[in-house]
Amino acid sequence: MSGTTISLPAWQAEDLARDLAAVEDWLLHAGEDVLDDLARFGTGKLGRPGVTWLVSDLGGHGAALHRLLADPAHRSGEPVNTPLTPAGLAGTCPCHDQASCPEQATVAVSAAELASLASLLTDVDQFLRCGNGAAMLAEYCALRGDPHPGYAACTLIDHVSFTAASLRRQAASQAGER
Image 1: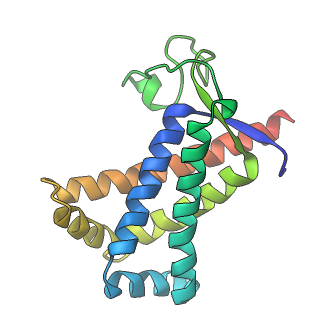
Image 2: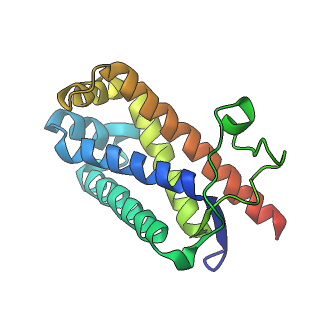
Image 3: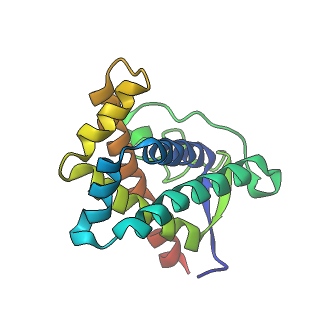
């Protein structure tokens, strides 16, 4: 599986890199109460060293995606704006009625990287949806000057959740094609 690559739409890779940076930034600036909650999350499976690893992993994955997006050797196709239609929101190409647009710019990402990202995003999503994770993220959004911090926090949480599901689906689809 380590040699297998998956063509991730460039817009999805850009969104993913942005979301990873947002969550990483929040955790880097979070108070001890947030980090303690995260350390205790999931019956304490992370612990404080696990929190440090998680934040580092968010940054590492985000930096790797930025490098891939900047390197023409990993890109193919032309940029295509996916319209905000039910088909576009579902990740399908409305102009070709396919799961992905054949003319869309893509980034080659290793299947192992996508699996790791999906797992990481699932952990982040579960933490943010339990206890007062959303409220803590909303406080951070307010400190950053967002006029609607609760909305911004919930939107980020939902986007992380949908992205994790999409990555798992893409990895499973790729595995099924072999």
